Length: 460
Image 1 (cartoon, rainbow, N blue to C red):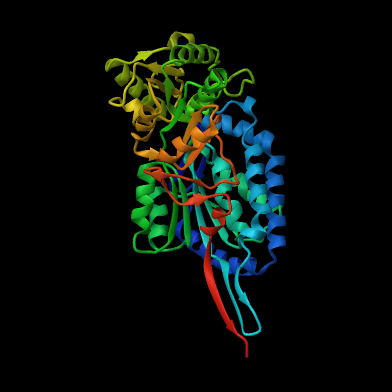
Image 2: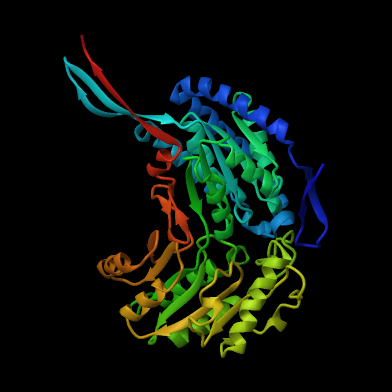
């Protein structure tokens, strides 16, 4: 039987290992899930909400252990306390709006007719979650799917192998009926085989562009709905009227937090020429103050990347940019833990960059950011749109009306003003271009895990 192995980026040792699920066991489990889902959908919405909220509280009770597991599995420092704050914010917001989001749309209720459009659960929802925020990303789909009356199958990335088991434990403790939630361990081939054979009724995937393309190919012709959150190259733009200190503090944190491994992290920054030199100087001082070290040490502010191959891609982008004329602002010698061939890499700021360089075009997903000088809004907008991706864009200005006008011209899923690297559960999480399609969270997050069903009832 083949194995799935999580190699810790801290020391390259095996942290966790599990057997790949057998196809026969999976098929039998999915059949049981369909049977269980019918009874679950028939239960009162309030009962479903209560169990889901109890499971979230059970996750919170495990958080001290989860934080340490995450440090071992993907390198995030324990000082940041894990993801439970965001998990609760998103989960409880989605349960709070469920009654309205799932309520029928009444068209007519008269002596002659009752006409309405109901929201029905789709059936079995397959959630494929990434390693960078394994709890936050999964909760976006898991909570609305279960609350709406579906069964859920969760597949986590190899790098965060234990996260799915924690979800499974939490739902069991909360009293979720058997077979409604299952954590699976699948190879890529087995995942594609299950999708191709239409074992699921909706698929939510967060990951790479290549992974999303593989999901779409496998689902082709099945007519199953797919939600995809893929790559990103999110920009920040600092106008001449911005609060400089706030812009630097927030954008650099948005670029470097979690070793730059954030879906909506800042990967390129455009600064008005009047503020550019001061911005770079302040950014340099912030990054030089980071402490790269063992993520289990509470003093560490920056841990290793999740895998050495991710670090090698960042190193390659930096080296190519410097060879093409970019200047590295940060001296790697300040971070002696930085060692080629490992997941340990120093944070870096690049200036004198342009869009001929991969570091300003391709997703870096690491602790590096390029900063460019711009002379006008039009120049900044053109550069922000010069990307294959479109998840978020961060604008720094004191002019709300100007931010809204600029935002309308940016090809992106979310426009921020004076903040970044945040997900508001009341707003839909969505992207355009190669960032993917579909929407999660907000009222729209319930639409992908339900289907409309029309009722035209004529009274006798």
